[in-house]
Image (cartoon, rainbow, N blue to C red):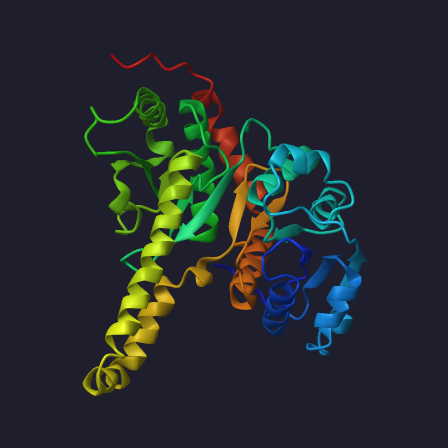
Amino acid sequence: MIFKKNTKAKIAIDVMGGDNDPEACIDGINRMLKLFPAVECLLYGDERKIKEVLQKYPKISNKVKIFHTESKISSREKPSIALRNSKNTSMRMAIEAVKHGEADAVVSSGNTGALMAVSRVVLRTLPNINRPAIVAMVPTIKGTPVALVDAGANAECNEQTLFDFAVMGDAFAKIVFNLEKPRIALLNIGIEEVKGTEFIKNAMLKLKEAGGLLNLHGYVEGDGIVDGSVDVVVTDGFTGNVALKTIEGTAKLCEHYFKMSFSKSIFSKLGYLLARSSLKSTFKKIDYKSYNGAMFVGLNGVVVKSHGSADGKAFFYALNTAIDLVESKINDKITEELNSFEQIAKREIKPTE
C-alpha cells in the first residue's frame, strides 16, 4: 500500500450507512487523521448526530465538513428501490461529490447492492467495462494478500465478464500490491481442465488468448485463495461472496476456540501469558478488520465499500484503502490495461467440446 502523510486527498464519507454509524465512521476518521492530517473529509448525514459524536473528538471537529441530510438508505432495501429513492440520501450525496469533482473518493458502510447501483448510475463505468466488480483483499498463508474479484457485485457472469474481472484484478494488484506480473487464477471446483461449467472453461480459453499480457496461473480451488500461490482470484460475485464470508467466519472461529482453550485452566492461562505476543501477531494477520475496504473496480470514480458492521478500527482501514487508491490513480491504470487488452477482449470464443 502507498501511504503518503502529506496527501491532499478529499474523501466523501457516507456516515449513516453502517450498523454502528455515525460513531464508527467518526472514530475511523479520527484514527486516519492522526496519520494523514492533510486529508479533507466531507461528511454526509444527520448534522445533529454527527456533531453529537464529534464532541468526543474535539481535535478533528474543525477538520471535517458536514453536509446535512436526515435521509439514508436502509441496509435491507432492495437495490432497485434504493436507487429510485436515493435522492438526497447520505449515500447518493457522497457519490455525487465524486461525480462533480468535489471529492476524490467515496467510502460507505451502507447497503452493498444499493451502493453499486447508485454508483453505477451516477458515476458510470470506465470505457469497455460492462459490469463493475468488487475487489476484496484476503490474507494468505504466505503473509501477502490476494485480490478476490468479484466479491459480491455480480451473482451471474459470462466468460467476457470474467475476462474483464481478470484484467481489472491484474491492474489492481500491480498498483496496490506493487507487483510487476501478478499471478492470475480462475476459481473452479478443481484444477483439471475438464472440470467446471462451460462458461468457466470458455473464460479460461479467453484468458489464455491474452498470452504474455497476463501471468495466468490456471485454476485454483477454494483452498487456493489463501495458500499464497496466486495474487488475483477471479470468480462470479455469488461464489466470491460466499467464499469471502466463509474465510472471515473461519478466522473468527479459530480465534474463538483459541481463546476458549487458553481459559480452561491455570496452566492454559499461563501458557497464554508465555505465548501472548505471538498469538496477538497471528490474530492481527487474520483479523478481517485489517483488510476492510473493498474497491468497486470498473467505475469512473473511486468507491470503497466498508463492512456494514465495521467499528472504528475497521473503518480506519477502509479510509486508508481509499487514500491509497486515490494516490495511485488506479482508474487511470485500469484504463491503460483495458486498452492493451481491447483486441483480445473483442474476439469470439468457440464453445468447448
